[in-house]
Length: 252
Image (cartoon, rainbow, N blue to C red; front, side):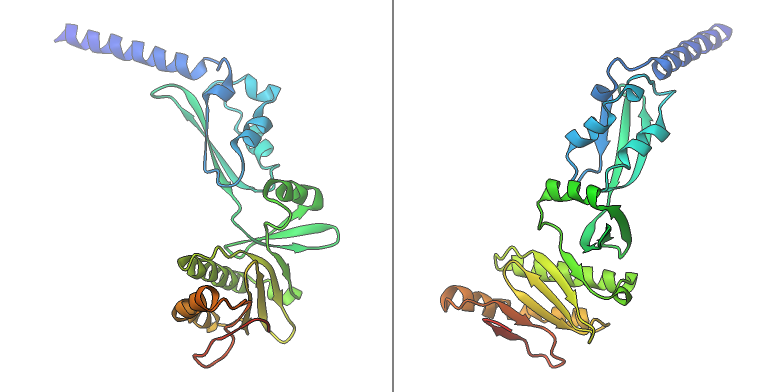
C-alpha cells in the first residue's frame, strides 16, 4: 500500500513538472501556435500581420501578453472584443477569440464616421479607419444612413435592422440578392430604403413597421411574375400603406 502511494506521488510530481515545463517553455514561433476564432469579415492575414511584432515573439503560456494582444487587435475598427486563452492540451497553443462589430450602416460626418451595428449601438471611428473598411469590403458595401440626430436611438436602429434583414431574406426566396445601399429618414417620419434592385417606402418607423414589411411575403409570387413572365422593369415597392395593400411600380 505504501509503495503504491509512493508511485502515485512520484507520478503526480512528474506530471506537475511536465505541465510546468509546457507552461513556461517559450513558443519557438508563437504565430504558428496561434488559433484565431470568431472572424467573419476580417481576413486572418490581417490578424497575423497585427501580431507579427517583437512583443508577440517572446512569450509562453505562463507569460501571455494579454493586454498587449488585446490593445493591438482592437486597433482594427471592426474588432469589438478580444479574449485570450492559453491551451495546454493536446498541444500548447494560444487561442484568440475575436468578436467583430456586426455593421448595419454608417453615418458620414465631416471629421469622423459613426458605425451603427445590428444591436442598435454606435461606434465612432476616424475617417482613416473607415478607409480600411472601405478597402476591405468595397466603397459601397456598407449602407449610408441619412437622418436627423433624433433618429439614432437603439430602438429605432434595432427596428431598422429587423426591417432590412426581412427584406433581404424575403427577396432571396425568389432568387433576388438584394442589398440595401442607402437609408433615408425624412423629417416627416418616413423611412425610405434604396437597394441594388428596388426602392422601398416603409413609412413611419413605429411598432407597426415590421408588420407592414412582412406583407411582402404574400407579394413575392406577384413580384416574380412581373419580373420574369411580364418582363416589367419593377423598381419601386411601397410598404407604407396602413391598409393591407402593397404598391408595385416602375418608379415612385
